[in-house]
Length: 407
Image (tube, rainbow, N blue to C red; front, side, top):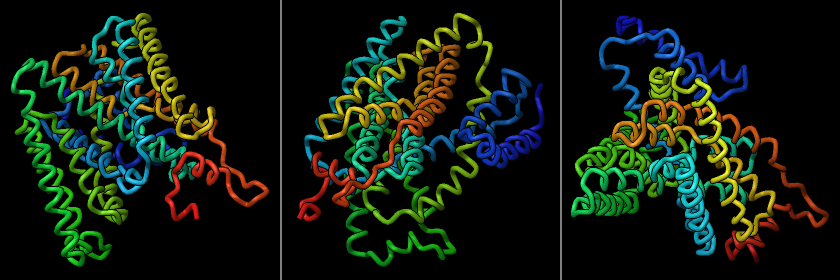
């Protein structure tokens, strides 16, 4: 049934407004309810078709802002403080994840693209879970953040290169992204130079009482600049949005106020519309047949295994076996990026529509299972007799503390 765009706008905006409150009441992530709300409105139940192109446009804009936020969540100050050993172990964990994902993809009769899909995780779910547990600055929390950041960035980058290779083959087209990254490096140096020589003017970007909202304007300009550059370089726009957010995080350390303003703009309206739109495109008939549902459960099992087994390598960084397992449990959470990967895969013909629906159902399952099990398994660090917390001892053991903190 086709409904007028005005009524469609009313339905979608009401859902975006009231679903977070309902989520707190039923203790479910609001993202899950937004997808379920879209499922009710869309192909699976009411089959409402909204006239006009406003919903896909707003959903795509929300999608880009979501990836910009993911880039901003990277703590580059903390990343610079870790030793080369930490990053060696992190690289080994990611390589093991991709390797196991390739085995899983071959087992279910799929190709390399499914391996990339299974290698994803969700920074947007991991960060709130760590903050709620009060462990984001602990060795376990920092290990999880680094692993999640690497998984998000590397899988998104490899997906972009894979799409380019699939379209152009092994040719000079593969070097087309090079100007994009060169431009990123040049622009990064320019912004760092301005921040160094004009700190007062840059500070205006983060003032609460800025009536012109220069920080928001600068961030959105940076977002669309990198989206445009990525499109001109034949890269996925989501990679440009992610790198634009990463640049803000690289240059500006005191960005909490700006993040809050962008969160109100993004998570308050546009990002929920993206997840509602994902739900409207979901066809429950594609996954609720017996064979397809069993296939989704098999994928769920592989999605958990390919994250938990490699996470055991984190014992090499000084974490205990149980802490490493807990990190792996949280990293099984997938939502935004896996849906992004499935959307790109469907667009370029790597997966079918029914397969994409199975991935969306998988994302909903993992975003419920991962944070819930993490909350159950996480153990708050206690004080021992010497007055030093277990967290400090673990930091010393793993080499996380800076030299002045050891003295």
